[in-house]
Length: 57
Image (cartoon, rainbow, N blue to C red; front, top):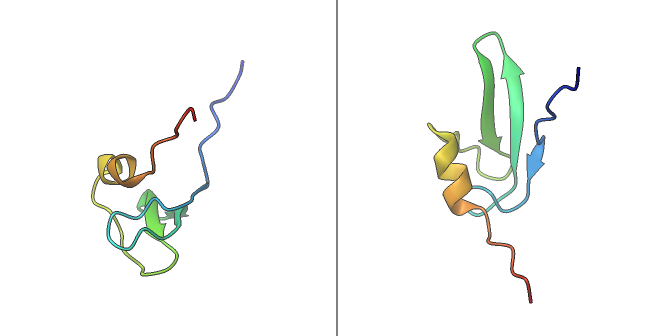
């Protein structure tokens, strides 16, 4: 059986400062946090909305 791989680092994924966002795990579970400003998004959709669009150009 194949296991899904989670991304560990998203470049320019922080909705607050456009910094790099990393996934962290602690006793409460997995969560994302910005490496530059320390912002912790409340919802993954915040990160998805802040991630830069990939252009086909």
